[in-house]
Structure formats: structure tokens, C-alpha cells
Image 1 (cartoon, helix red, strand yellow):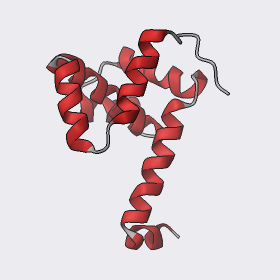
Image 2 (cartoon, helix red, strand yellow; image 1 turned 60 degrees about the vertical axis):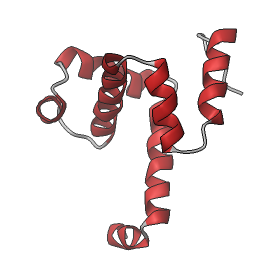
Image 3 (cartoon, one colour; image 1 turned 45 degrees about the horizontal axis):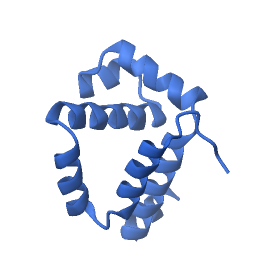
Amino acid sequence: MYQSKFANRELDLLFDAVLSLKNKEECYRFFEDLCTVNELTSLSQRLEVARLLYEKKTYAEIGALTTASTATISRINRSLEYGADGYPIVFERLKAREAAEDPEEERKEV
């Protein structure tokens, strides 16, 4: 079992809360209460940068698409390369979900 270096009671509560959410509407409600607009924007931008890096886009392409700085892109790239593999887990699951929801897309990739 993975043991995070950041694990503590407060983070456990946060993650348990997120895992208890049942749908996107509940996520919007919870995160709107939990985070500021800037915090949500920052988190979503990081995830988008990570997704684009995972898809092998260049720093220039990512910067143009997201307005993220090269420092931010570089930091996220380090997490992708040397981190805890959280991004790949999420991206592979999202890809599998998309394929399950749209069988036509799955046939295109084959």
C-alpha cells in the first residue's frame, strides 16, 4: 500500500470527503465551498498542463493553450516523471471511462 510523505489526519479527512462525492454536481458544490475561485483555477490549470504533458505536447504548445508559465509546466513535468504516479492513474482511468462511454472512439484508436 502506498504511504504518502504528506499523510496526516486532516488530509485523510479531505480525501475521504472527496471520495464520498457521488457526481460532478456534488463536486462543484463541495469545491465551491472549499476553495476560492483562484485556487480552483490553479488546480484545474495544473491538471490540464499535466494532461497535455502526458499527451506529449511541447512546453510552447502548453503555454499557448493554458497561459501557464514555463516554471509551472516544468514543475508539473517533474511530478509526472518523478512523482507518485497520481497523474497517470487519473489519466488512464479517464481514458478508459471515455472509451466505455463512446465505443466509436475506441474503434478509431485501433
